[in-house]
Image 1 (cartoon, rainbow over the protein chains, first blue to last red):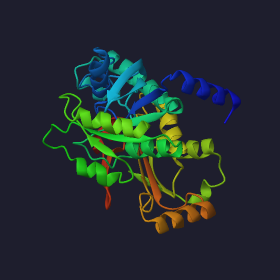
Image 2: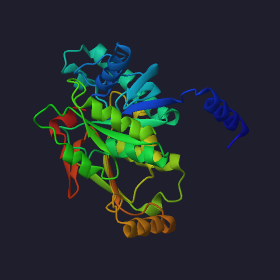
Image 3: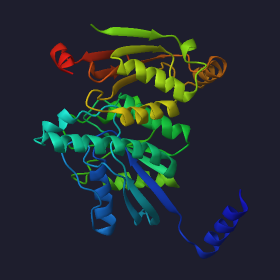
Length: 208
Length: 128
């Protein structure tokens, strides 16, 4: 341990200062990362942090909410919540035009989305622990999911897999558990606020 | 016409990470589906996605990618040890990787036992 770290740990112990956890929210496009980030912020600070949309790549820049204090089971911790753009291996502006965006708007959105993916990958260096949000109605055996989780494992960053959209009929949490048997998976509906207590409990287990 | 190009592991084993990514991406940008013996490491996979994003333009829409490594998710300690020893001895030669341009491959569907390449329809490919 470096001398600086030792001193800072010493004073933290003396004055009881809580550690600040940089919590990254990662995942593929349209899995509900921003909806979850909003739900967490709404629950604990009463305001949302990101805009959400059915059009893919709505989050094209890193969004951060600092010092969000979360309580679970009589414990409390401070988090910096980092909502990241969805990671993808391809972006076609023509796909955005299906959502009635003009060609210029679609091209601009595609350009920003490519930059967002690059930023999200770069930010892997800056997080202490990560929620990987997957759409539980989709096939989890997707290379983007495998690459994100593999990179987090290679960096020894603790991961909680969040199977979102469990309120939908096609949701299949078991499939996610089978795809990533080494990881804890918690099912929620960020939109409906379903199973959030269990989610916070698992989050605290992850960071303890 | 679709071209499937096989790249044996020894063609990339001596290249730097950047060199490997460049080689694979150049083949994909040349409208070829690449079947690579073995795989990139996890950091290189992320770097491949980053580099792909940097190069997306009106003609190149990105890639479809699938890495198949049968022993990767094994929970059996003996298989894990065997895989680790094999990786240390022969590098990331186990498994295989498929990379293709998104204008040719629409999507790759996979489950534990099969891999399906869904192709873009020929008219759409021609238009691009």
